[in-house]
Image (tube, rainbow, N blue to C red; front, side):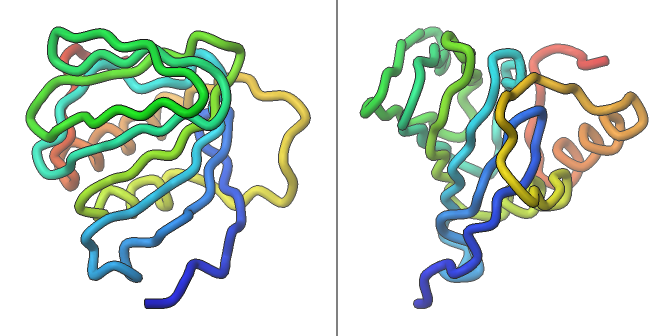
Length: 155
């Protein structure tokens, strides 16, 4: 298998990410993304029907809830969130950098579709929800195509 050669960053939700391992290089067994996100850019509680997720914190501090268990993760900490169990995370510092391992890797396509190439890293990050029409498209894709279900309505 070939290593990822394109480490280009992509803008997403007021932060950015880059692909560390693309699903095409693993036979779709997994994808690994490195996210840097500002406080407020987190997804609400949700359930993945098809994927397990793992989180590894490189910088900052996050609170992760998996089922009924809340865990605080700091630099160097990791956590597994199995499919079909509700989970969410909250960034406790101004921003956090984490590796998100998605198994299998299909959901990587969603992040690519709803992000933009980033010519240079921003000096500061600010959570920026997408416009209403784009949010509607994102929600339709993530629920209908990728079977990620949110536990409460998003507007």
